[in-house]
Amino acid sequence: MAVNAFIFPGQGSQAVGMGRDLAASFAPARHVFEEVDEVLKQKLSKLMFEGPADELTLTENAQPALMAVSLAVLRVLQQEGGLKLNDKVIVTAGHSLGEYSALAAVDAFSVAEAARLLKLRGQAMQKAVGPGLGAMAALLGVEMELAREICAEAEAGPNGRETVACANDNGGGQVVISGHKAAVERAIEIAKGKGVKRAMLLPVSAPFHCALMAPAADAMAEAFANAPPHAPVLPIIANVTAAKATDPGQIRDLLVEQVTATVRWRESVEEMVKLGVTNFYEIGAGKVLSGLVKRIAPEASATPVGSPADIEAVLKVL
Image 1 (tube, rainbow, N blue to C red):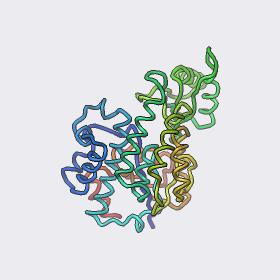
Image 2 (tube, rainbow, N blue to C red):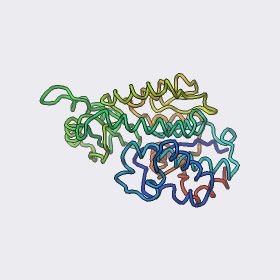
Image 3 (cartoon, rainbow, N blue to C red):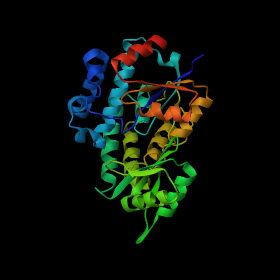
Image 4 (cartoon, helix red, strand yellow):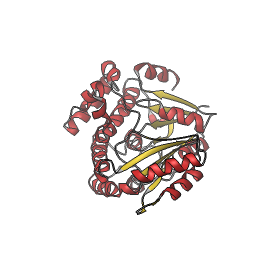
């Protein structure tokens, strides 16, 4: 029997045009986009549908935009397709900002709360490190142990220690590192020297998921004082622990920690498989996570659900 998990994408999955077909086809999707526009006092939906791409990619826009598309898809499944999450899904998880989408899906946050929190998270992350001082890079064909060794070696700079750490363990030999730009560049050279297949800088605006993000973690701790999570109707697998979380206090603490910690995506997928999950549905924009799942757990199925056609196909099997 199929056992289902819903997973929610993170940054890098945004693209101009996202959500446009959903809004044209389904009233529940339009309502989500209108609600997010209203709460942020910003025409985010117009930016999503029409661009420009560089403005959509800014982390303070990309984060709430990706959540909005995920929740629009979910609301269509629920309101037009009659999907009852508790009956069909045993667990949810999201990659980085996708964790907020996952939590909104299981009623730990409302859409409005998630939008406000992600806007703030994006602004705080951007502010934490000055432009051009931080960087992120993808290492391909590397396991976590070697990636950690590379980072440890790259920390030593000509003017003392600098920060570089493993930001995402994406599985399938893909690890993303993050930190001071010079340290990340040193890590790329060290990785090449150690026979790593590919190592390249990523086009991101700040070094996410490393110690340099500490000011952003403090900002989130403050924000949760006013908007704490509610008890979720289903467990999530948390990025920080790669384990189930259901207690609102624990979820809050993990979300604060997540800003500076490694996204343990490979282990999160492995944990869901251990819990019996056979079918992963990627709810929202793009298909990045579906590709990662297929590499981590080739025996499981992974299906992106982002377009009206995807929604129709999924409602036939769920």
